[in-house]
Image 1 (cartoon, rainbow, N blue to C red):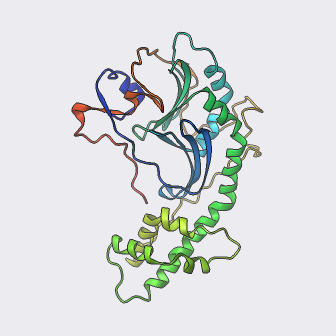
Image 2: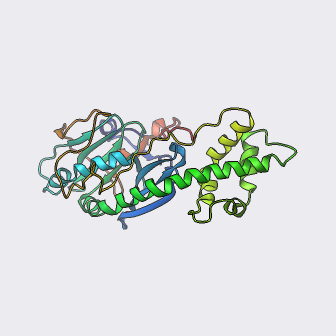
Image 3: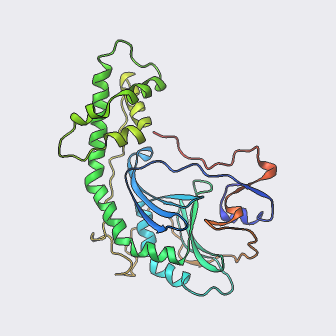
Length: 318
């Protein structure tokens, strides 16, 4: 059964079968940083074509993942000193602590395999959560500057190029469509038409000094290219592939300093309701364990409910 940890805690004694979550979307111009090679945990940063071409961060484990915004990652780092001081304590009698809760995410502690761990859980995508132990959190803390250097570079340099090349791609497709006698009538036919276009012909029409993202757009933004071209040739107004709002996050920006430099909460949190760290009901008796992301009831559906859909639900691609 997929669902929040709190919901599943009440039924952890039942017999379960693992149901994998829907895979995360592929990212353009992606960069990976390894948090734990043995357990295959990594942080994945890039431009998400299924989310209006916004910059996103995926934290991925072998069995789960979480999709967070760069703004929320910034807020996690702002609390890192407080989180580490709690996680590094020797666990005694277990008490869950909520470090941060917004409309979309919850950040809290739990005891797993005899040590305190951090849980990052989505409140809008059922079953999307990850656990980070003390070693992985320290690794994340060390990678803070590297991560935000990547975010700044992608936001300021690569993001505008990707959007410009999206326009170049669609303009090239429109030119090719004007040459054919029989236009694609369905989305499937348009997708096939776009797939058959040779990448090097589009690349040749791009500015020579730009980094090439044509092949990545064709691979990972095929649905967006198809919809854009279909709407244009159906006489509809083509939607913008992004909302035009680009927030740049930089370790060197006046609005952001790494948690290792300052302990002052310097982020504007007016857009989401935040609950500061507070005790939560204790939970004992975790019987079965999943070495990747916590007890078995984190990953599961009941056998009796096996005929019901339990996969996490995600918005359809644009």
